[in-house]
Amino acid sequence: MNQDQFNMEIRKFLKKVGVTSQREIERVVTEGIASGQLQGNETLKARVTLSIEGLDLAHEIDGDISLG
Figure 1 (tube, rainbow, N blue to C red):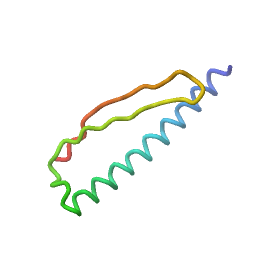
Figure 2 (tube, rainbow, N blue to C red):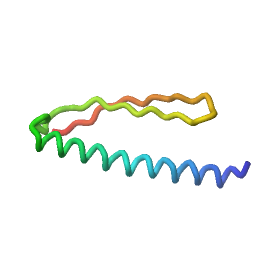
Figure 3 (cartoon, rainbow, N blue to C red):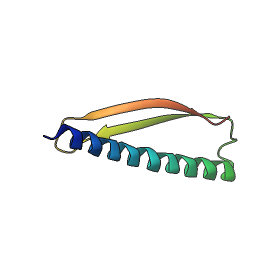
Figure 4 (cartoon, rainbow, N blue to C red):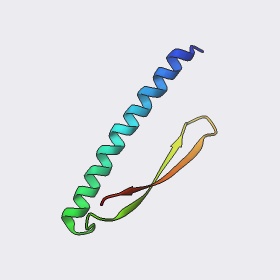
């Protein structure tokens, strides 16, 4: 295994995850505020589950996202 190539591939994947996740969170929060579901001052509980097909990986990351 080429460690440098592997690390670059992981970084590319995580960048894609970060960018697309941020866009989706921004979209649903904006929609939630527009619809009145959110006031804009909440703290949201968030969870991400990372898995890799064919490998025994199921890792959850929990956190809070404060809107106000």
